[in-house]
Image 1 (spheres, helix red, strand yellow):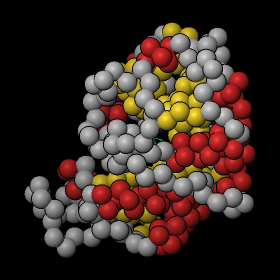
Image 2 (image 1 turned 45 degrees about the vertical axis):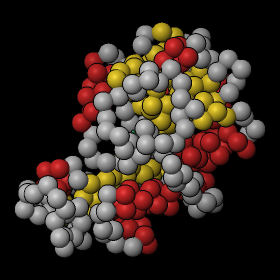
Image 3 (image 1 turned 60 degrees about the horizontal axis):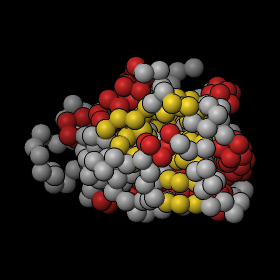
Length: 297
Ligand code: PDD
């Protein structure tokens, strides 16, 4: 089946879908994006993602391409036309197209692109059952990681480093020697006394929608939660570790920098929270539960 992309008001076959050579996303990484999970052909936590998108646009003073309701319709139509049952939708908004000049151009319309693709749920679940390896590397990103900017070069370099080390994810370490987050996920550990630890929201990390949903589930379970930074040394000694993201849900991390975490197998708590999240995500997409909120830093 041929794939269809939404570009500035039109649904086009991939081969014809394109943006201008002077799009500011291409020239300056002047744009933001979202990735939203799709289950049963419907988005998970659409509202949380759209609120985050709008907040990120406002932070960068990029005009909203359309209303919230209209965005939702475009995303649903992109999913439908690509016949995605389980997968994700990728949405990118840039400041627009203008003759190359650093300051913001006046009167341009933002560029809106949406593409949808299927993902293999069984394969993701199989990965989660085995657990994945992670490495640590220096966080080389900018000072506004709360914005989901399309300027992803440091994240791509870190992910490549992880790949070359046979790992799934790279955990980024700030100048104080603390883990900020994964290159495309939030990072969590479970301490020896059973507390769930993930970094507090600030400009150093993206406020993940999956993180927000999982915090709510963990609170409802009465788990002890600590929103604070932790070091790689603390992670090596942790009972469990995992990452969360739209496309991985909750992925157990069983080794960090080649050192086994816990007994080297996915942890019990990680498995339990992952199962809770799967039920949550299925019900949320089906419209039976409200969207996890976007938690502003
Ligand atoms: N990444 N931190 C970073 C740096 C991310 O890029 C992501 C998501 C997350 C998790 O956020 P959420 O739970 O809202 O997906 C945290 C997406 C999936 C990506 O870039 O493909």
